[in-house]
Amino acid sequence: MKWLLRRCSRCGRYTLRTDSCPHCGGSVSVPHPPRFSPEDKYIRYRYMMKREAGLL
Ligand SMILES: [Zn+2]
Image (tube, rainbow, N blue to C red; front, side):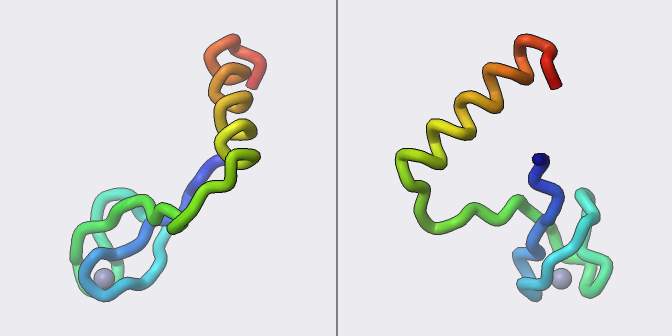
């Protein structure tokens, strides 16, 4: 599962665009959840390992 949503740093709206905000033209960035549980980190780590191994 890829993280596709980006969030505009100017107007705060979400978009699938990766270059600029379609609403206001501001810069977009990947919104990070405020907290990760240890379990989330573990899942993300396993995902990265699988991806590096070419399983995905
Ligand atoms: Zn915007």
